[in-house]
Image (cartoon, rainbow, N blue to C red; front, side, top):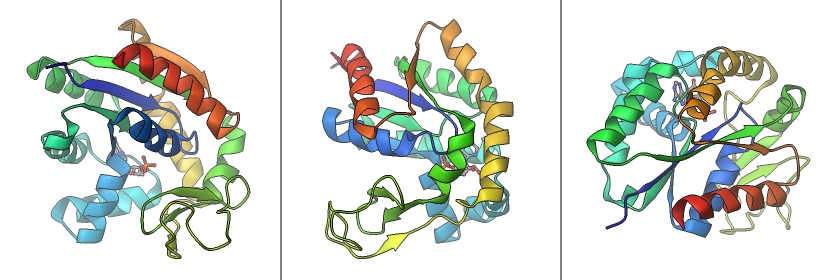
Length: 222
Ligand code: AMP
């Protein structure tokens, strides 16, 4: 059996990690694993982890490594991840990166690629403030950059239910950008040092960025 492909998407809020992860998921049959989505589900379900994470998430800070790692390990143990995963929003600290290395080593797996989505911070507030997702299938949209073909109806699944994240507002985005630069951006050199880093210009059209990412993923999974 081939080893699972483990891909990491790095980038500040608004860089397009979620959008691109969904596209890679469809194209390569991998599973998108977003710790942000898992944490939001824990908050919605009112679990102990969700209760502990909620205030930190609304303030735009980082949830403790302990909580995030527990949630990630549970998800990685599910059988659908066996072909490979696209980690979206994880790791976000050096502690998480080291824990991921250990987890993968124990499974005889390793990181195929860590891809840094490179963007200008100044554009991120508009990107994040205008985004929303389909409540039915999770497809992402944006007030300016990507509207559904028929207003108010999801292109993918036809749902008319759309959601905006509570933390996608200008103040919280600034705190999230700060957290990214202080705690997550150092991981770019961490993965560069391991020889698995690729950088992609993520300021362009969604499809252009997707093509650049697909080329990298093809090399890793091919
Ligand atoms: P995201 O959906 O990736 O933008 O994450 C939303 C929020 O969830 C972040 O602002 C953090 O508060 C929290 N979060 C998500 N992933 C992590 C992580 N790997 N480590 C710590 N906090 C996280």
